[in-house]
Length: 284
Image 1 (spheres, rainbow, N blue to C red):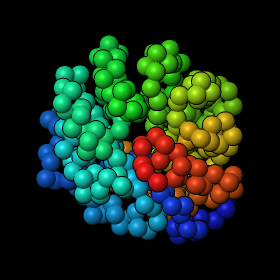
Image 2: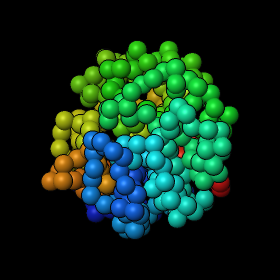
Image 3: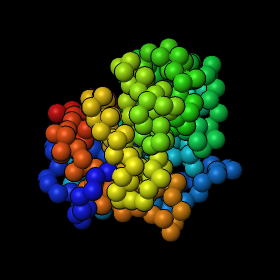
Image 4: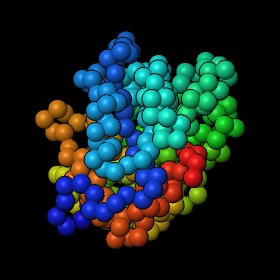
């Protein structure tokens, strides 16, 4: 995200409560959903914890991958293993989920509902209206992975949900749209309305330049940090299920880039610790 050389890992100690807000666990104890379009090799919690220690992080949010469909057992098992002070979950639900199921997931650490339009999830607005009405009193948010080109059409519906909405993976904004065109314009309008967050995760999905620099994202990063620093999050997207095996990114270098950018803006603690604590309900 800048032109400075990437050190091997964070250049400074992480703020207390620093959080990875987006990673997945793939545990062979839990079978993938029938017909899953993405079936990556095992990526158990033990391997993820090696990365977390290397990055100096204290907290994490396990995001339900599309591979498991609406079976959240793997995700919730990881949260239970990490403990309530250190982990939260974002889950995928069927419209028929019962209130008892929602309460059980909430007690186990779930704080968000995920829709991944870019992995084949059908955006049934009527069904989602009902689900969101039931999780909204629990303080959950909607995590939406959608093409930026769809945001203008989705905006009235997202506003009507009356709950926080987190746009995944740089909101999938095309760097060529900065400033003020297409998906960038639509995402910024949502940000400016005050209830939308953007997750600075998986830059390789938005950038057209190689990592770890992804220098074409620098103008977008500067704009987001100026526009809504209090509603930005970061996630590693480990183990990078959207990347081909030969194209796996360097996690330490990517994180060092991000930390350098946030540190220059004086926003390291804001984005890595304070914002996740507010959205996911972590204690002091």
